[in-house]
Length: 578
Image (cartoon, rainbow, N blue to C red; front, side):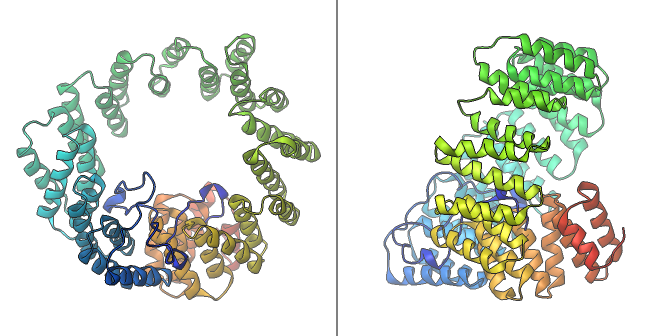
């Protein structure tokens, strides 16, 4: 688990949900489908459960209880039984979610199929069913579900991309390609360009870049006016180290949409990388000169090591007039930072006093003051924000001041400050969560546990709090079984969150399950190149006797952040010198 507040993710099904289960759903995130594609039930509020038979509700209660205790297999079985005898699609959706988290693919296929039957217009249900069926090798069943997706989405580009993403998760690329061909034979009305684009995506996800590029070229030939096809072909060409061909596709796309901000920047970047610096500069000069474009131009000149040109643009920026002067000040302040003109950046941030950027500008100004040695001045700026700010401003100012103190290695002072913040805002989850993480860093497990349990009591589905508490118990106590139950609850809700997968691996390691720990940690590292994850992975590999692989993992972590405290502590404890 990493301890950055911004990684907080909300969600959890636990015993607290049992009382309200008839009135409101306790589920949070959708089931992830194989290969990282997500069955898209993530949008919108949860659907309340329909009042139903006592047997159904008994099984739902039992499933929730088992899940809270970390017994995922039992929770899967109980939820599946409830889904089979109930006509409520929400119960089938929950059964699917838990089965996916447990990686019980046979049960996941049955639950998702039931969900699709009960809610046939729901693309997400068919997506989950197809993914689970692909995982168990039921290609005919998966084909049926994908055909339903194509029908519901009217053979759109998005539909074919969804199908290609599902097939990319298959363990048998040959069978997946056969399935795609079989579906194509039945979809005469599908756009050839869309199909080729989808086939290109499938090939790319299977690691066949040359084949993907060939399909992309064919898609462009079918519809040369589609920017989506052109930019995809450009990406593939770049991946195949064909920069001039990539540039040709991007140039065509830009010619079709010369006012597209992001496309213009991508075109300029590729021009620069292929040695066409003057042409890149011209593209950016001809863009509409909004404040964000001026910032991009300055960053561009710095990227090609032309600081005088960047400074000249900064002076030009200073003399330009825009309808929104505070927007100008905000972007110019960022440019000043890039030029290492921090005093000037502070002056510019001070001009941003209203609108959606005012809070960010004030916080950044305070941080710069601290960087320049004026800790008291920076803290005063943040304290002034609290005098007449709204709730969000007050909350963010507390958090920013605590962050400044923590970065100055004044952690106990930061903790005391957050105590004052809690007195003023006792229900602020971000403040409680930040104080809990700080307490854990200081080794005050009881304090961290207290704050995290307050959050969990108020928000039983807060996966970040569950994960933080579980990780803290696994890392700093011997309450491993309790820790695992908490982390598994977070994992049910966010099975693709790297920090939670890291915690799953770490608690498995603490419990002596080395092979399982390695699998989780490798997966977490693949998702997020975080030095803390690499430190954990390296330790598991070292203890498992894979010392060369361990050293490799630690060196990779060191190349990212040689001062990471978890990495340093691990190397010191194991007496490793890299």
